[in-house]
Length: 119
Image (cartoon, rainbow, N blue to C red; front, side, top):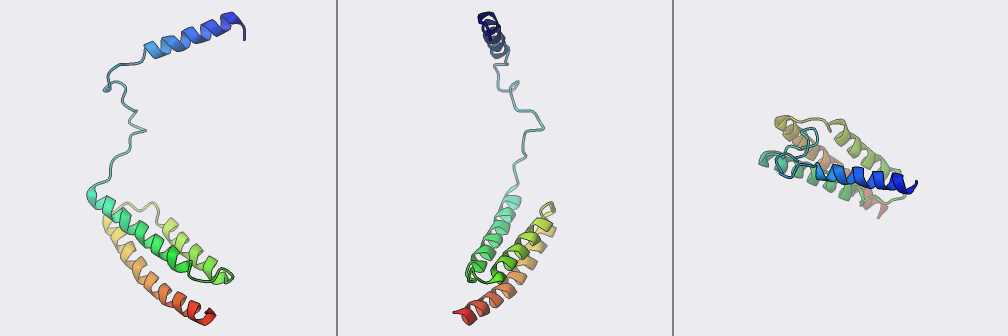
C-alpha cells in the first residue's frame, strides 16, 4: 500500500467517524440486535430450569466414571433439555420442570443404588 492509498484510507475512516450520529437515540442498536428483557416470572422460571439441570449433572457425577451408566444418564438428561429448548410458553415450561423433577427423583434413587452397589 503506497503513501497515497494510506492517506485515502485514513481520510475515509476519519470521514466515517465524523459522520456517525452523536445522540444516543440515533445511535441505538438496530432492532434485530436488541434483546427483550425477560419478565420476572420468566427470569425465575429460567433459574428453576438451570437449577434442575445442575442438580441432575451433580447427581450423575456421583456415579463412578468407569461405569457406562454415568455417560448414558448425562446424555439422557441433556437430550431431554435440548428436546424442549424452543418451548416459550410459561405454563408448558412449568409442567416440564415439574415432570423433570419427578423423573430426577426416580433417577436419583437409581443413582444412589448404583453408588451403594459399587461402593
